Image 1 (cartoon, rainbow, N blue to C red):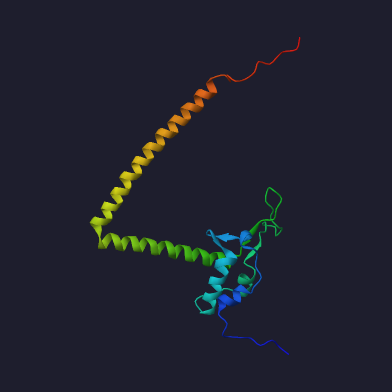
Image 2 (cartoon, rainbow, N blue to C red):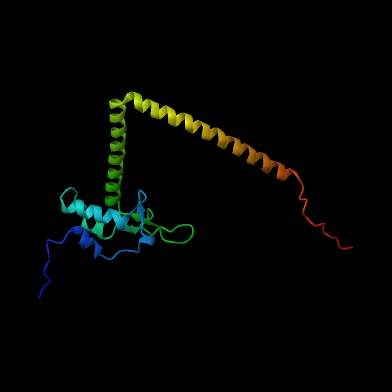
Length: 165
């Protein structure tokens, strides 16, 4: 008897039941876990009809990288190189670009709505940051001078080495 499909089960519940790597080994795209976030997100956007990402891309989003001759690519350490399937990578890139555009639009809207307050915030941040950069420059200069001085001085604590006769 065929298994009955429950069409009322939310996609996020179905995604929980799909096998995937442990969270500690989850591949990341744009610093976000592929199996833990991107696959469920894009499964949901497919479900709502907002995207049409293939089931193959969502089912196997991480693939072996190939060289131009079609052979498996290996890293210098000898491990096979893995990459995000292009179809999914393109969608992640689109989300990232839209997110960046949204952040910039928000900043521009605040600048237009509150120009004086925005300018005051930016100037205050610039002044505070300048003081931090000056302090760090002094700390770095002191550290470099100490390192140069340590290199120039012979090791004082070294025991004299007896030369065999």
